[in-house]
Length: 139
Image: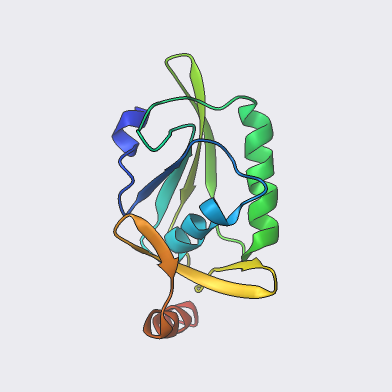
């Protein structure tokens, strides 16, 4: 698999240039939306112009990603994380399958927000979306 096959920031993929530890909402809303929807992948090391920049310290970055997901998403979604090497650069790819315990909330500053994917954006779930997620999560 080549990174270029993943990028394009569509419904099932999102890209981030770096891991934003101080602003985790910028990427965690995609994790929430993927788990609440059809699943998807988040690629770290690609900028908005789709340049393949790579990530330094990819092992450390992947450990931080896991820790932040465990503390900021409830319930904790299943994730598949891989370090991918291409053209001498490393990328961290998080694959988030469709969750079964929906809704998956992003938690911060006393707020619990469930996100859904609409096109290439992760947006807060509306009342109808939230009802459907609760029903799906309770079977």
